Image (cartoon, rainbow over the protein chains, first blue to last red):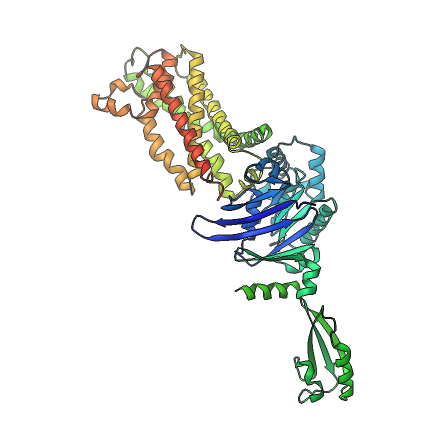
Length: 308
Length: 253
């Protein structure tokens, strides 16, 4: 199946000469959740803004649902809903009228039943007649999401949707996102909360200094790049690592009572069985064993550091 | 053509007008009434007729133009600048809306507002002076053309302004002097000869002259010339907007 969004060799140089994106290629599959990760200023928002039409591209082209975002922008934009990073709402307008306005911009007639559904879904129905300036920060963010959904887009962009949002709203938001995914909506999000991306995204794209470093299914990335550690706590502290265990590249943990063994999670032979046997043969007694998997965050930090 | 988008922007902007209906209407009506009292009644009572028309009536077209010009510019410039300032313009940018539709929505609403205000001031004038309009259709046409072309001009100012100071600066430094020197309160012929020539470079002279002709059948310059100058101004504004759009429209980077 053709990707729903095809980004081909796009570059963006801003007026001041800042090279925000360098020859970026990206295919986004229909129905997936793609998380874009990257440090501040990496180009995530620029990429999203170009796809959505907020920023003009310098080179390359983008197809959304097969429609060029420049020459066939109407058809391309009809498919997209955008939740921007910054809260940007007309302060003196009611929530409901704001939604009607957005729907109108997309050429759709006001559909009270549909709008009520959108508002209820985001727990905004009782705020429909409130002016946006009277709402709390979290509520405003809900309004932004409602606006993005009110023309039934097939693709939803969420730019840092959980920045500065309390736990409850974050939970609600991810619920809405997974519900939308079930309905077949393609979702592209950027976030700083990497554990969220790890939990929700089908694929992860890592972007730094205007370049996409990798795009990979979250699970295989975790498998491929994830390191595991085996922490072995002994009953007695050691003076030094016994010679019989020299071949395992062991290190001491926090104290001389803990041994740390690092291994590749996807390795065919992890060497754990023989290590345990050798420890036993060396006359040591185990008190506890713990394994630890490196998180997406550690993988991410490692990759970005590598590039720098 | 995405007509729903045009009407969405239009009604959105009109809603802004009706939200602040008191200040939108009271301030122009109040300031015009003050002009009538000061220039029409107090000073005007000592001035004989100008070109056979009582001074109070003579200044009506100029006063309407004065308000319509400033209102068109401030409404249209604010209308596009404010969403740019607070960032909510992203919605329009991300929607399947063309540049023509954006201009139609924003400028159409601004022009409607100032037309509305122009008509209210026109109505107010009847409380102060005896007025008889010789060419009512031409009057409406001149008024509408002025509303549209100066709303376009205001839209340009709103697009280009980088802060609220700039938004105020052009109306304050350029438009107000042009309007005052454009013959709102006097006939160009009352100026010394050299200044008459200078006045002909002021576009507002043509607006007021043409508008005054529709009221009284007399004008400083020929009606055809007035019409041509307004049309020229309109085309010029459209040209600048088109060029601004080509270079990113100042709302996209």
